Length: 327
Image (tube, rainbow, N blue to C red):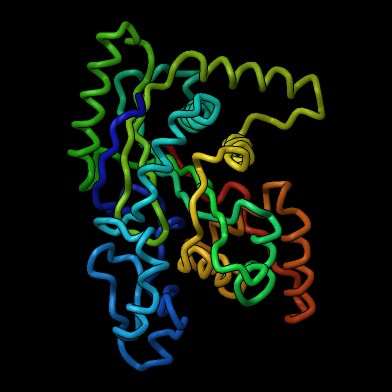
């Protein structure tokens, strides 16, 4: 059975400053007509149900409701997100790669850390399942292929170990979940396996979905085996957090249960990343497409266009910008 899912407010104080959005970098825009607060000269209206999308008027809100309704969830979380995450955890191939990220980030090959609460934030997004749709949105204006509905999929953009999970305001909730899972693991005979807490965060929300996960010995064996092969075979990529995420994202492309319709806010986030690469969501997207080979031609075209327009070659995002000091 999938592990329990819990929602809590994400305070961000346990994560490094480099992954926190800066208020000055964010401008709210209407989900229907795309006008910004600067355009209309006043604050936007916000969806009272999910608190994650904005409108400039009641008319725009009513017009956009058929598109927004499937994505409108409680407490700022897209309604579809918990279901997608449950489906992710139903796939053992994806889970073992996510657990391998914990092995690498917390050096579990060197230390067992079975008595510590290991916490990491995983930033997720909804992106087009078809690379041609992504290319059209990222490099051009307007809807992809002029289709009304674009099939999307869950994607993992970043994995960030928490700096100080004990000192955050969300710690009591995480601690309670961790203790419960720690006791369950002990009772099942897995005393030597660490138990981790994963905060699944969505860029359009101030909330996170938290899921506990026991890190089994098999995750350590996967890391050890791939590391051994990569040392003797230059065609095998090294075992890193970035490559684990890339494997997960590529595998998701073939998982029908991890697909959903693209919302207008998801499409706008990708489009905005091409014009304003300084927001949190844009930084994560640029780092992702810069390191994952399936986007190589798309990102190269983007860099060439930016150079022609500005005369300067854009600098690539740091490949490990989200890795930080261990808690």
